[in-house]
Every structure is written in structure tokens, then in C-alpha cells.
Image 1 (tube, one colour):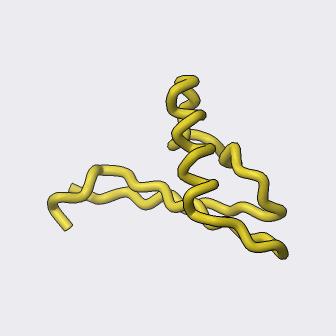
Image 2 (image 1 turned 90 degrees about the vertical axis):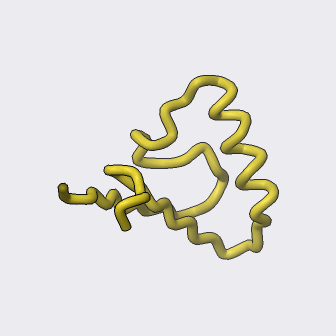
Image 3 (image 1 turned 135 degrees about the vertical axis):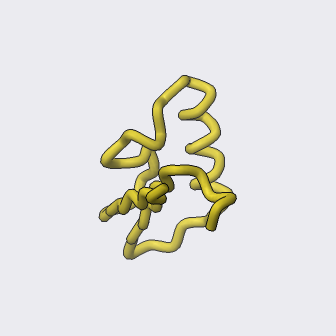
Length: 60
């Protein structure tokens, strides 16, 4: 656990239609190139119906 960063955000994506990990990665890469602060977003720039996120903090 000591090797983990101080903060980790997990994003969960739900959709009725299937979507690929490659599509999600492509959209996230495009957002990173556009300097979108992905770790601070409530909703990722991915076309799915429902999203949720959970931020974990490592205590010292």
C-alpha cells in the first residue's frame, strides 16, 4: 500500500449497450491531450448512461 499515490479515484461506468475498453482509453487519451483534469471530474468524457466515482485517500 505504501507504493500507492496519496489519492486514487476510481470511476465506474454502466451502460445497457456494450462498450470497449479501447474506446474508453481512446476518449480518455484525447481528454488528457486536451489537458482535461480527469482526476477532478464528476463525469468522465465517455458516452455511457451512468457513471459514479469514488476517491480513496491513503492516510499517513
